[in-house]
Every structure is written in C-alpha cells, then in structure tokens.
Amino acid sequence: MATNGNVARLKLDSKLVNQETSSDFGSKLSPIETTSKTSGGVKEQIMGLKEYTLSCEAIFDKVPGSPTEVYAKTMIDWFEARTLIAFEYALSATSGDVKYTGNLYISDLSFKSAANDKVTYSVTYAITGAVTVGTV
View: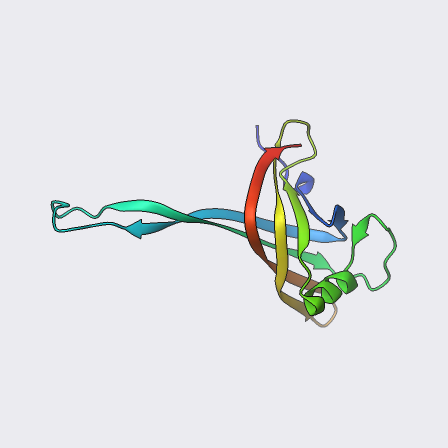
C-alpha cells in the first residue's frame, strides 16, 4: 500500500518544520574502483563511504506561532551561527514505519518571491556523522 507524502515529517531540534511543502531524503554509497590487471577485463568495485542528503521547501511565515515548530527565522539563525542540529525524518507518523535520525548543518538557504504568489524558501542540509535507521 502506498504512503501519502502528506504524512512524511521532518523534525529539526525535535520540532516540525513549519509550513513544509516538500522534503527529499537520499542515501548512497560511494564506490571505490578496485580493478586491476588480474580483473579479467571486468570492472571491480567495493563500497566506500555512505552519504546522506536532505532538503526541504516551505512557505515563509514571518511570525512564529507555535513553540513546537521551526520557522524560517530560526533556520536563518542556525545558518549564520553554523549550528549543528539534530534531525529526524520519518516517512509517516505510523508506529513501526521507517525513520532516520542524525545531525546536520544548514548548507544552503534560499528564498523565492514571485509576483502574485507566496514567499517560499528552500533549505539544503549537510548531514554529518552516523545516521540511525529506526522506526517510529
């Protein structure tokens, strides 16, 4: 059964990202080539470092309303201070579903303001250290 993207949640410092409209989480292994003269003309590889990526987009809300949510101003402050932030990314709030936890920095923060449209912002995170895969 498919999971509705509306139920995926990103938490930073144990707080939901306010007005989040989308998020992307990725993981990959960096291959290390080990091909040698004795490889019989076939490329050989071993797996090296793990890398995780995370980004999100949200609607800009200049007036923080809930102490249980993270607003754009906090993101700006964390970026400027180079703050290490605990994160949790869950594919849903359903007990037993997958969640990832770890630490990250904000590496990229941009705002978009088009005529006759809402102001939005995008954040790219630099995940550092181990990421734990668990359940909600």
